[in-house]
Image (cartoon, rainbow over all chains, first blue to last red; front, side):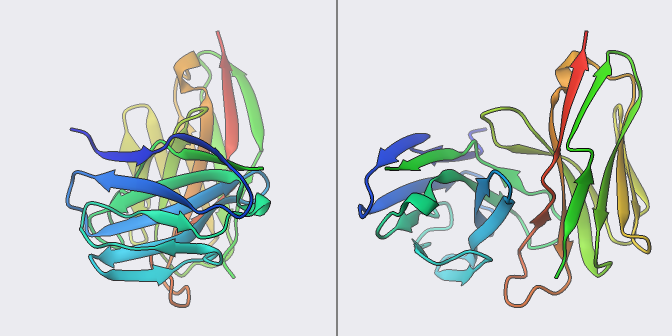
Length: 113
Length: 116
């Protein structure tokens, strides 16, 4: 049972570079989410997706792009990385929007220098 | 705007103690409330999910209660063990959050340390 996997787990990149964080889930869950976790802010939703080809903004979407061409994959792209995007990024999935357990990946640690 | 607060930010107890973690939220219009555990360098693991119509949920040594009217939830851990050491987060799913209906609003967590 692979669950939900993120890659890379650790990444250092330079300001202005494009970075893509990958997320893959094996449960065929409809909903997938990207959160970032920062000291002092806790976890905040960046984008979420209700199904393939359906995505919507969360609380902090600026500077990020997502796509969902297949149900199992939900990549997050930082088009031009900034130092303020240094964070831990968590992908998550759930079967339905509400009333179901949400499952998190182990996180991607991104440092922008 | 929904806000979730967890107090205390950190808690240290000796092994074997029963303990209570607190979570409060400002808007009672929620679908559900969830408690998560996060180990250092790891993702979040869901512990208990309480629907808005429920009062409590139990799993093993864990019991979570929900009082929607007062905007409070507690996570009770019985007979604590060193393996329970982790950060515990609560999160609510608001009924209305503009367009971001999937959003969970998280507290900042309580870091629990159980000493042998």
